[in-house]
Length: 358
Ligand SMILES: NC(=O)c1ccc[n+]([C@@H]2O[C@H](COP(=O)([O-])OP(=O)(O)OC[C@H]3O[C@@H](n4cnc5c(N)ncnc54)[C@H](O)[C@@H]3O)[C@@H](O)[C@H]2O)c1
Image (cartoon, rainbow, N blue to C red):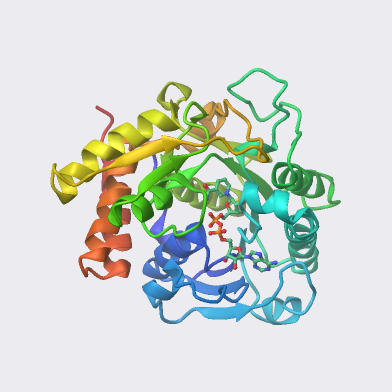
């Protein structure tokens, strides 16, 4: 059996979300607002020319603050909000951007975490804080799937900055009963418009009749829909807030047997795209290795602890994850309201979680 979140816990709860306008943050904030939580969000203003998912959702009733999380300007307003739960998602989240701007990546990902922890330390009313990192925090010289006690590492600036965020959190004095870290693998889902992420790349290429360029077709990734780790984040913070004895870090990833190479995902997506857009719609891809960017090859996580401790587990397999993602984009392009699409998929997911195990 899998467990779903407790709506009563979230109803009326004051929740600080950093990175609320990002891909995961938008889905999460939409979910929290639907549950009746009060949300105070801190993020950067959008880049010129972008219309991120956040803007398309047009959520009402969110305290929408734009500031650099690595600075101190936002702390007074966030403290005045008196959050009971803190979900720290704000990050420079792209491996490629980490190579382009290592200093900015370390600044945001390390000092941003420092600021969040300073805030939590100053607010005894925060009952639970979750720092979101990534599956890339592990030293890749170890065998996979990675378990939570494995050594941290990071050969590129993004991975190293996230491993550093883990160390900052683990070493911060006096917060061990309130602050935890969550390490999730790549997520996919509707509304992600970032560059160099596979699903947005697929949608951009195929909806304009162009050839999709694959950097590492053989790289194995533990694909999961964005809703899956988000539910894990909700369950984890609920349990920390209730004072349950839970580990300080948890992996959130699919069964390693579900991890498939990029190539397999693209082949499945091609079939799905034909089903959505007509079998004669051309879909093409080619391989063009990136000479600069080195990404770790075989990232899989052991999520047995999250399963045992939180009764959490993947409900949608990787095929469902890609099907739901492509369906979201196609229906949004066809004029459906992005907010309704997000909520409909969350409801479909949570009712599947409630179902008895097959
Ligand atoms: N998307 C994935 O596949 C994935 C995988 C593993 C881990 N993660 C982690 O999950 C979290 C959310 O990822 P995402 O995909 O939503 O990222 P995203 O890039 O879509 O969004 C990042 C968010 O952080 C905010 N932000 C960035 N720099 C900031 C700064 N200096 N000050 C304030 N806000 C800032 C942005 O405004 C945005 O709201 C990140 O911590 C990321 O590292 C994501």
